[in-house]
Amino acid sequence: MQRRHFFSGAVAGTLASAAVARSALAALPELHQPPVGGSTPWRPEGARYTPVLTLNGWTLPWRLNQGVKEFHLVAEPVVREIAPGMQMRLWGYNGQSPGPTIEVVEGDRVRLFVSNRLPEPTTVHWHGQRLPNGMDGVAGLTQPAIEPGKTWVYEFVARRPGTFMYHPHADEMTQMAMGLMGLWITHPRQTSPLIAQVDRDFAFLMASYNVEPGSATPQVNTMLDFNLWTWNSRTFPGIDSLNVRLGDKVRIRVGNLTMTNHPIHLHGHEFTVTGTDGGPVPPTARWPEVTTDVGVGQMRQIEFVADEEGDWALHCHKSHHTMGPMGHNVPTMIGVDQSAVLEKIQNLVPGYMAMGERGMAEMGSMRMPLPENTLPMMGGRGPHGSLDMGGMFTLLKVRRGQKPGDHSDPGWYQPPAGTLAREWTGPVPEAPQAPAQPTSPAAPAASHDAAAMHGHQHPSSSPEATPAGASPDSTLPSVRKPGAGAHQH
Ligand SMILES: [Cu+2]
Image (cartoon, rainbow, N blue to C red):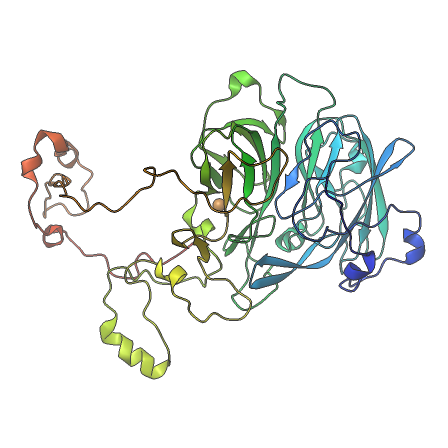
């Protein structure tokens, strides 16, 4: 087990806007800060569970006080690196957004001290927990809000094993838009037929931010139009890869505190959803998937055996969520010849470049000058060139040689000879074309009639019916104008 190092509490204190009096902290558990360098699961002495690895994060150590596990969370302003090249001013707990993962065992009595170093009142809601109503953390309903500079204490028994989260229930529009949130894992006390033993257990929370390129503070009034899609407040290529040993049983726990759903997709393997924040899914109710949708305020835990070697993508399947920050209202320019206007624009805007004529992939490979403190829309590099991804994207790295419990990055996968897609230089067989569709100029709008539907021909029935070089545009009632597909979230 690796020795963990902690900053002194004074480091984070320099960022605090409201200091908690030292005398008030005297009786509190040690104020732990994120460990320096890398994510390693924290296994307390005597723990009989596989500890969770929080991607780009950490687990909060506790102090045992007469049988009670005591934790100390400090809500405070933090600086978080989103990916190399971009830092943001967020709100988090104990020096980081999201806050540290709370990891306990079913039946544990937990006492959580919460100090507020934010400039406004807060609370902590323990999402998904069975607990006394007065411990539920809803400001104004179950308790008054925790004023800046004050420390409150919550205490309850972790009754239900599973995947949970914690977040404020006071001005949550602002506080969650600023990144205030964390994960909570309760391991089962005994082996359960509903809860598998796994070799690797990963966890992350999804958060979205709206930050103008070049600025560092999220716009908290944004309702839906976010432009930075993060896992544990990081984006690709800044998200830890999930490094596992071939044959490992793997669990991934995902929570969604953004304002939209995220279909989480894994390459190369099938998984089952084995639990939600509501508890374990009975085995008879599970089915295989390669994508599972995680709705707003939901958590999903997926499990699979990592039995295919390689570097497998794990990402949100909404394609705008695997991109870095961008300005909105960018018109779609695919197929638009901009050469005629380019010179005129360059006279007005020196250095202007025409973009997007052949798609947006050039955004990743061309090293454009960017405003300070932002990321390219697609910034990664892979072993075969520009990896046109950003946002909610990382890799599952499955290796034969990965040691049990070793989470270090094994580097890029070296595929065996003959198993790599390659350029074809031999004769190319003719590619069948879609069959001709009958069109009727007389009925431009009402094209959903029976004649149009029945006019469909199966390609294999008459491949020679394909009109070579026919221009469908000549028979279309109208041509889409550029800009009609302007980027909108
Ligand atoms: Cu998404």
